[in-house]
Image (tube, rainbow, N blue to C red):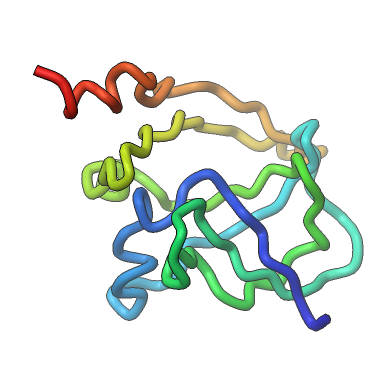
Length: 131
């Protein structure tokens, strides 16, 4: 009742340090946008940001105050650079997610999103199991 869980596509498989040793760094700043890239507005509430893996420790952030998130909203974990991706794992044959960079319009606050990496394909993720 006091909050909700926001499920995102990248959890402890990409944000290993944040999930397994959160005391090692400050939490990633997290921002919310509508599915159209506009800053999310509305009443603030607490969210736990959880990844897709099937265990209780797949939490990227706990008790983050954001506008109430809805399906298809965009959740941005800032400061997730090369060190984050270099630590990523293919646990459970997970594909590396696409990586997007963005700039924010100073006037409107809207995002302009650009693909930096398409991530791995299913074939690339499963190649570890073949000769």
